Length: 270
Image 1 (cartoon, rainbow, N blue to C red):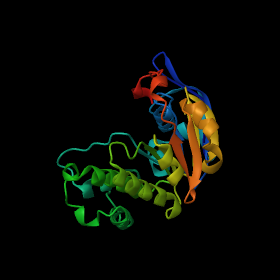
Image 2: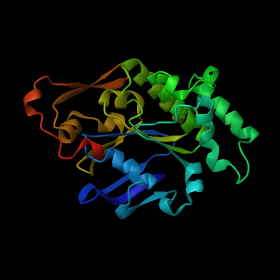
Image 3: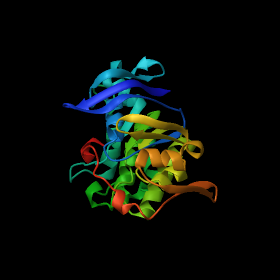
Image 4: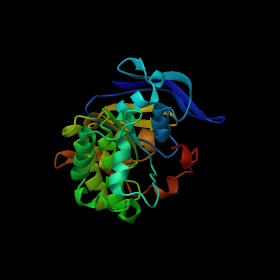
């Protein structure tokens, strides 16, 4: 299991994570939800070691994750940030090949097994016939699927994703999250992803971690954790939560405009 225990992290003097303790169930998809600025993205960055911990520890299978050498780390955890970029000249095939870097020998390149992984990753995301296309010539939905292909080709047991459907329209949000869900159901990956839409969370995630002001408010299976009470406590939002066609639906009440307050932190620390 991947777990963070009593984690404290800051940007300068601004504390973002306040003694947070969470665990992520293997082989399941967990969504991190909460208001802007509550620390969702910072938690992923703290796990990756991009934000230093002021206190606490991150463990994988009981081992201090940040003591693992970076190449070994990359074999076990893949990370997709909010914004992903690559040089204009890079093709989709070249992008996906980058995923195998942690497996390459000092003087070697991709093995036959690596090339099988690359081809399978492109086939999985529906881009097998576009390996020679420049990534920046793809549509928004295709580019996001391209970066998910790179994550797949990394073949890590754990995948961290920060808003993988950001800036996508509804059709591609569902298409991309179908692919993300398939990482657990077909490939057995442990997926932790930041989502903003509770209805996407209840549709695709197995578990949910609900955060507010850098602290854990609720954690558990989606069907047991996303309730009117937890939504009110986490988001200051009155909403009806009901089951329809086998999943939960969050329907906010309409009289919320007058009660909207500015976030306590900048969106950059979300």
